[in-house]
Length: 312
Image 1 (tube, rainbow, N blue to C red):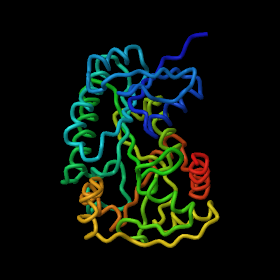
Image 2 (image 1 turned 180 degrees about the horizontal axis):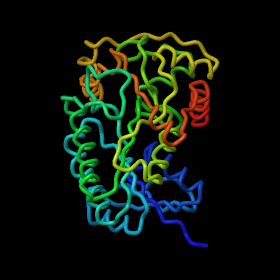
Image 3 (image 1 turned 30 degrees about the vertical axis):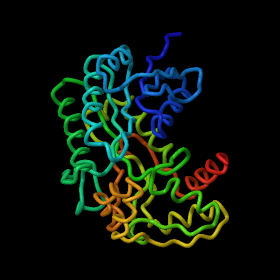
């Protein structure tokens, strides 16, 4: 039997781990590249310690690979310094190896005032540091594909939630408090629609895009359940946990004070609009093209609650 070509996953956070585990479960050999040498424990997963900004080292790992996934996530406050060399090294490795480069992206590039719901080909108008950085990365990637330098695609997701998700609007700041029946504070408005992306749906979308030539050269949106409010989302978590939770909001002015002791709160000023205005994505194109569907909120909330309980 001919062995399947291996895939390379850069990063072992919830996205990288989810992609690696999904690939391994279907019998695909995977190499996970991180600085620490971490990653899932599975017979088909090789954990490789390397600096992914080293294009030569990364190209060597990608030699003979069918796909390489950019699932890295530099610290929020270091995006301007850390993303450019990492992004360029990944494109260089894909160009040299011939592997399809699949980039995990978000919705920042559309910027404040974007038309709702956000669709794949809407203009990228972000002017803030983080949104402009993501817009440049997406443009660089798709321009390189169009020029024939490499094969590439990208998937945009909303705020993550689900098993393994910690640093998210619905991660470690919220779920443990829901489990304990304690008050939860959210950014912006608790009563405006907001799209959330369930982590297993994110991983499934990335793997699908890598394997399907129709995906290459384009951006795609991860299928999400119908957008609800943050209050409704927390209510779904509470229902799964069997608790009652009061929801309050963090005012914009509080970010400056909180930022004195929590650097990540300073970084949220640029993306405050995402929680103070409707922030909804349309994934119709992805769903109709590839037959993918989103996990329902009740099912996703139940799995999320169970994962957190298992950690305890």
